[in-house]
Image (tube, rainbow, N blue to C red):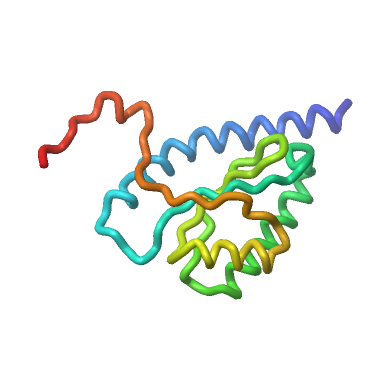
Amino acid sequence: MKDTISYSTLMFAVLLLCGFTVNAQTNSFTQQLKKKPSIMKTYVIEREIPGLGQWSPEQLKSASQTSCNVLQELGPKIEWIHSYVTGNKMYCIYRAENPELIKEHAKKGGFPANSISEVTDVISPATATAAIPAN
């Protein structure tokens, strides 16, 4: 019972922290996209991994370490921003010069990249009330 409470408390704290940081990241992320186009583009990668939502914190840490090691090897032309873990999928946000780098990262890391989509814009509840700039 004590382990369950500790794990539940830990998960609550992580989710709470994510809630506070996602809003700040969304604003920063939106500003980055609206800057002058750079060589790096933003992508959403969908990874199908059965049972992923049941992985332990240790398993998630190990997967993160593998990803970071491959990113170091590939150099500054690809960057992992963050990922969302769901039941059987992970949605990763990356910045890269091209989708081929993302495919190479997945191959070297030993994990799937079932779809890679370039982000063209970001919206949020703030978009509903934002002024539209004149052309």
